[in-house]
Image (tube, rainbow, N blue to C red; front, side, top):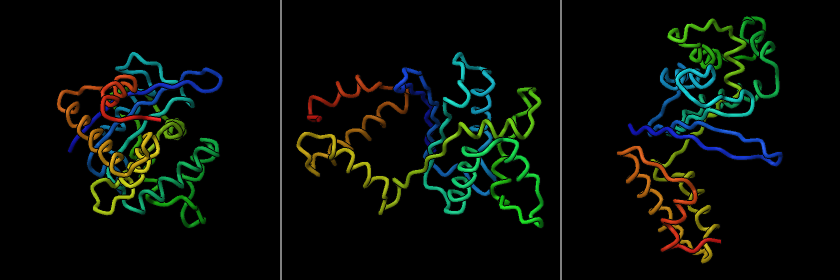
Length: 211
């Protein structure tokens, strides 16, 4: 299993600075039992400002987990749960979580497991109600890719993106660009290295022309 963590920053139209912390794992991380404990610990550390110099802007910043392709049921239930959280209130979500399935609750057992898996780790000694867990989940994003599949759609999308940013627009050069990006990642991973966009372009421009 390969693991990588890094952060990124951007500014919106109103010049508000937003940040995202990203944890990338090469294997499948989220299952019917919910999220892995190490990511949950990382997320709460960011949320509570423990062990980090960066102040997490609740409701604006994000914490992202990138994994291998998820089971269909997990992906579907997480997507539905996040949609409810983004468009509802924490108290309403908690009320639905506490309702009985016999009363016609639309919250699935898997969604309950996902929320339960995000309980605040005891080491933070921070009393947390379920509503605060829901508010944290509001700022969590889960991305999965099927790069290991021989019929990978993620890889196909990546190649199209590579082709669209090259001045030549050629499929062969897009493949070469993708292979170079993967090689750069392989070179940096063992030592935990990183490149910002300007540095990455400097490495690539001797071989590729960009629009």
